[in-house]
Amino acid sequence: MSSTPVLSVAVIGAGPAGLYLTDALLRHEGREVRVDVFDRLPTPFGLLRYGVAPDHLKMKALAKPLAKVVADPRVRFIGNLEIGRDLDVDLLRSKYSAVVHAYGAALDRTLGIPGEDLPGSTSAASFVRWYSGHPDNTTALPDGRAVEAEHAVVVGAGNVAVDVARILIKSAQELHGTDVPDEVLALLHASPITDVHMLIRRGPAQVKFTAKELRELGEIDGVDVLVPSEALELAEADLDAIAEDRMLGRSVDVLREWALREPTGAQRRLHVHFWTSPIAIEGSEAVTGVVVSARSDDGARETTIPAELVVRCVGYRGLALPGVPFDEESGTIPNDHGRVLRDGVPCVGEYAAGWISRGPTGVIGSNKSDAGRVVELMLGDDLPDVEVWDVVAHLHEAGLATVDHDGWLEIDRAEITAGESRGGVRAKLATWDELLAASRG
Ligand SMILES: Cc1cc2nc3c(=O)[nH]c(=O)nc-3n(C[C@H](O)[C@H](O)[C@H](O)COP(=O)(O)OP(=O)(O)OC[C@H]3O[C@@H](n4cnc5c(N)ncnc54)[C@H](O)[C@@H]3O)c2cc1C
Ligand SMILES: NC(=O)c1ccc[n+]([C@@H]2O[C@H](COP(=O)([O-])OP(=O)(O)OC[C@H]3O[C@@H](n4cnc5c(N)ncnc54)[C@H](OP(=O)(O)O)[C@@H]3O)[C@@H](O)[C@H]2O)c1
Figure 1 (tube, protein in one colour):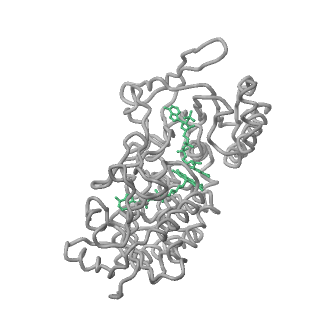
Figure 2: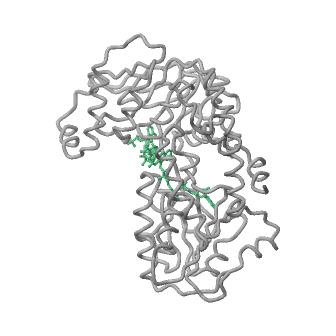
Figure 3: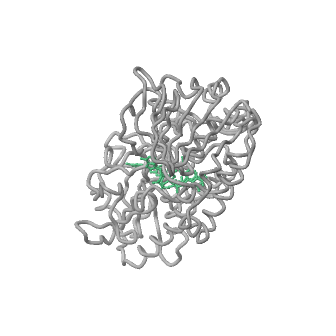
């Protein structure tokens, strides 16, 4: 530990935003930098480890360069430490040259309709945690309903809805060779699912998902994709919107191709419903169906789609941390280009990056450019050099058992070793006890 004053930065959150920001700070020449990266989990990488779909191996590989950032000798990873619960933000602000909030947006949005709390109705956040082997997943789908359902409804038209629909309808066979935990694979393998319904509340010209992800959904063996062709008869304004947005145009092209397909009689079907919103979830003890309102030129019509599982994929939401300004409406930390606003005034020395700063949209790469911009701002802010705080000693005295970089490497090694028996594919440790035990070597 250096006693010479340096630019000492605390980063809250070891997800893509926090780690890209750390990387950008380390790359800056001309100033001695130290970064402490805190995470409530004993593992780094945030949603890259626990959100990005397990069958998206190229995306998952982005963890490799980020692992180098965590391993840099100027960085200390301090995992298993929840800021706001275990350590105060105000204390961090008093000990570091700057504090950066990069703690993501882990909560889920609700639909606000009757029946939403019935067993069998769940959020994308829970469902994704379940198939990603997240240690908080114990509350997700406790009754294994996800894999007992023959009919499922997925609400939303974003890439998370596409991921969830794909995992539900894909044969578990195709998920071998990924880090989906064996217990989850076994359950998916036994899944009797036949129909997945995607409910999209607006039209093809308003979808949020992207063509590449959508195309993949239409290429799954043993699945018919059913899109009503009349939904692709677009209004003039929609055609203009598509003409102006190439990405959107590509998604609409995929949908148009799907609408032309003849059903093959496949055992599994993906139904895409446009202009359709859920208005109630039915069932007495568990979900049995979703009442929807479907709009057409003839007006709105109510029907019920039979379903034993409903996954709402309607976006994530940030969480307020004690002592940190928070905008309830947007679920973000109010900020001016990354400088946190306290009582409307930009704070030199306190910054926000990633999903907690701009809301829960954007791909991994968006956080890299975002982080680069925030670092430029920080370096222009004349931040003071300070002596590096002995945070480890402080946490030790407070009786807090954290997981450092060596501890994370032990977890990593344990998962890789356990994966040797499953064809060399990482076997994720999926409980807090297992992770913490492994971190101790
Ligand atoms: C289901 C899903 C799939 C996705 N798939 C893709 C994809 O295939 N490709 C792509 O490019 N993008 C994908 N994305 C988007 C991508 O994951 C995000 O852009 C990115 O993860 C946001 O980074 P972040 O660092 O802001 O947040 P996060 O990744 O959520 O990281 C935040 C970190 O902060 C930690 N934290 C939270 N609270 C605290 C606290 N109080 N104290 C300490 N630490 C805390 C968390 O544990 C977490 O590690 C996906 C998103 C989701 C939800
Ligand atoms: N492979 C990938 O690259 C990948 C994978 C997953 C996620 N991501 C990224 O991660 C980010 C988050 O994705 P996301 O899917 O959670 O969010 P998103 O892209 O914002 O999509 C949310 C969807 O939910 C719909 N919705 C919201 N409230 C609703 C309601 N009450 N009823 C019905 N529908 C409702 C929205 O419709 P409206 O538009 O009508 O509001 C929208 O279609 C995105 O930027 C995404 O691209 C990327």
